[in-house]
Image 1 (cartoon, rainbow, N blue to C red):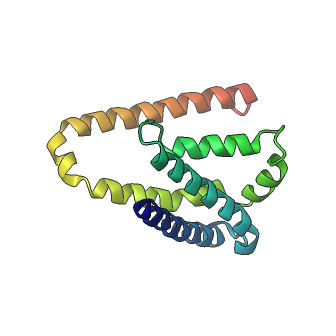
Image 2 (cartoon, rainbow, N blue to C red):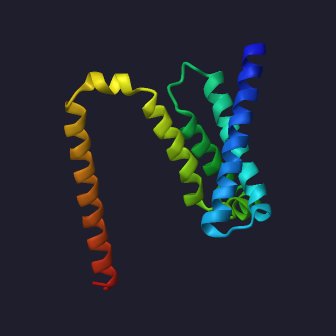
Length: 154
């Protein structure tokens, strides 16, 4: 029990640091007021915390914490739910793009910690990465071309 409680405190500290980083990033990058974004950020952090607790509570389920968070947010924002209006009012004050900077930074650190594992994969991972990048680029370009054509922009 103590171990789970310690882990919960670690999650809360981590989410608090990330939330502050997101709020500062939103203020600098998008000119959004920290005070108006704070309630939405607290809601998002609480959803993330609940998702992490659920993931830890049911280790046999191979369902990632991100999926739990998405499911919780989806349920809270459904139009027939009494929470939808309030939930959307506050979370819409948090710019989604502002949340990506710390997330990508932590993803980079995570990959950086596994450099030895990446070295063992050798040159094959490079070929796969190039194929993924090229496929993503052309896939995005094709979708953009179709949408712009349908809208009559091009």
